[in-house]
Every structure is written in C-alpha cells, then in structure tokens.
Image (cartoon, rainbow, N blue to C red; front, side, top):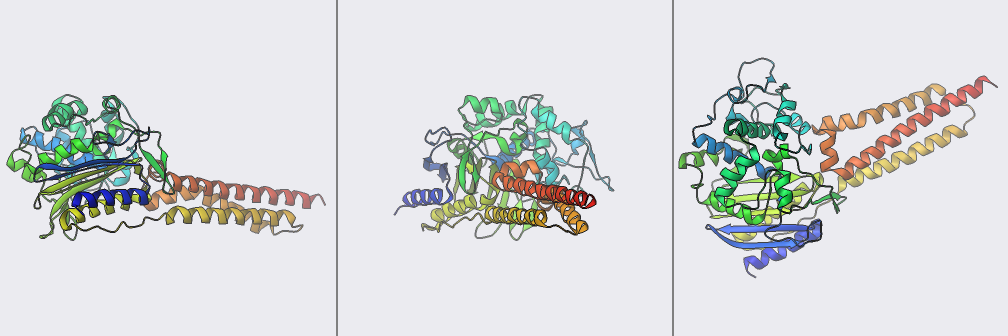
Length: 454
C-alpha cells in the first residue's frame, strides 16, 4: 500500500476510535504539497475540506512569534529590551530582584508569569479591536511566580503581552498587522485573527467531548486569546506556512532572524527545548520543531522536520482535556508512515477519570441517602456525632472545587471548558455533599427539638 493509502486508512481508523467528527490534513514534502484531504463533517453538517476553518489553539504561538521576529528584523524590537520600554502602562510585582522581564523571556515563557495567572485571562470570549488591550489591563499588577529568566512556565499571558507590543509599536490592531504583514505575504487567504473575520470566512465551532462522545459546542472565539490560541485557519493555509518555513522564511525574515526564530532556547527535558513559540527536538538522529494546540472544541498538531524535508498540519474539531493524547498519537502515527512507510497502531484512549469520578459520586449519593434514612429512623441519636458528620460534609462540598483548581493549577472556568463532563460530575458531587450535610443537620436539630418536648 502507498503512503497515501496508509495515511487514509490510519486517519479513518483513528477518527473512528477517538470519535472525532471532522479532520483536515495537509503534508508538504520538499516544498511541494503531496497530500491533502478532509475527513468527516463540521458541526453544521457540511463536509470537511482543505478550506474548512478550525481554531488552531497554541499553533497560534509560532505565528505570533513570527510577527515579533519580523519587527526584530525591521529594527523595531530588541529581544533583550525590557518590556517596560514597550508597555509603560503595564506593571507587575516581584518579590526581591530588580531583574526586569524582556521580550525574549515572553517568547520563551520564562517571564515568571504563572500558567494559572495566564489561564485566568484566557477563553473569555472578549470581542473587538480593544480586546487585547482590555485583557492586558486586567493582567496588569500580576505577581511574578519566578524571577524573570529562571524558570520555563508555559503561560498564555506571555503571548498576550507580545500581541499588545505589536499593537503599540505598529499603532494598529493585532489582527490588522497579522493580516497585512504576515498572512497576506505568505499567501494565507483564509486565516483570521479575530472573530468577525473568521465568521465572514465561514468558521463553524467544533465539538466538546462528553465521555468521548462529541457534543456540538456553543462556540468559543476569544479575540484577546488570538495571539496564543484562537487564530482560525485551514490545512491549506497552514501548508503554505509550512512551505514558508521550509524555504527559510525568506519572504519575511533575514537568514539571521530565521535562524534565531527556529533555534532552541530553553531546555525542558532530555533532547527537548522550547524556542520562540516552537517546541524543538535536538536529537541528532531525529531533530524537528513542532507545536500542538487546543481550544475547548478543537485540537491541532503542526510538525516540521527540515532535515528530512517534510512537514504537516493536522486539524481536528473535538476536544477534551482527558483526550489530549489522541492527536499526539495521530501526529506520531503520521510521522511513522512518512518516515518508515509502515502502519502504526491506533492506540486506545480511555475515559477512566470521568468514569471514576462518576462512580465515586454515585457511591457517595447512595451513602448519603443511607445516612439520612438511618438517621430519620433512629429514636435516640448521638447528636454531636451527626452534627460533626453534617458539618464535615458541607465543608468538603465547599472545598472540593478550590482544592481541584489548586491541585491542577487551573481556574474552574478552564476546567468547565476543557473537561465539561468532569466539571458536571464535580458539580453533582458538590450538590450531593451539600444536600447530605444540610439534611443531616436539619434532621439532627429536629430530633433534638423533639427530644426536648418529650
């Protein structure tokens, strides 16, 4: 079977196993588009094609960093300049040193701004030309979790600030600069960086996943989130971006700037680094750069291997936090087919987290029902014990969500969006524990009152 045939079979098997409604894939080899196909359907029932628009998630980041590198090339930005020189009205708090955050540190996620503080501002559905400015104003005053330059902590806030720098330097909206100076010059005619343009080009929301089943989403398109996660594009347009990358970025960048743009900067683990918006493998026999991305209703994988002369973009229209590995496995499978010509295994994805949470909730509900029934049937009770149990139940209900957010370092809104099934079960659990506590306390007080009147 040819590589194209293997890819077709692998895509269909993967989409069936992972219950992905629609996907689009484009592959570039030696600067030429050698494969392009759409699979399945959009949320409005239309078939997916090469021109179907998807939110591309964090694949937006290397495109935003390209805009910064163009301004570097034009002499408008200095990578090691403190951001206070570009954003004088933005302020942050730090504990001890006087080290200031630089452009380079924003690009590499070493600014010291935490992932949590970035997520607090993400997925807000802010719309309009002032959306980025509003989000930056809300971020102002943030406390740095680490000293600038010391720790790599991935945070949407870094690329939000980079977009505001683009706006202030060019004196135009981020979307306008991206359209005129990046997309048009690469030939990306169906790529948008605001909701209005995406809607005019026919963008349809994707699907959220509930226990693996795709449920049509209400749509999430955050204009302030475009620089780090809400650009909208097609596999055909991103194939042009891949060709631009494989040509050395000559349409926009000098050789020196392009070399910096694709170079490893911050070590993460083993042979893996983070660069200027890119995740980079420096393994001698397998070096490449890539980035995955997700929004509440889409996932994407961009992969470029310049040494072997190929790259590809995979866009899918379903997402859930628990299914993050599905498109990574698909990316690795496509890589295996292109490099080895063999059919990879389609690994199973499970939903153990959801089912475990569900059965725990059902068990606690039955336990609470049994406790309440047992208490009602008793004539004489140890009131102090039952008051303690009821109070603990209410306290646990109050603390479950904050503890969950602390454990995962993720705001509750993000959990609701990226794991709606788990969030729903947690809400049921909170309701169960609250109802149990209230009923136990009410019945105990009632029995105490009855005892006094005997």
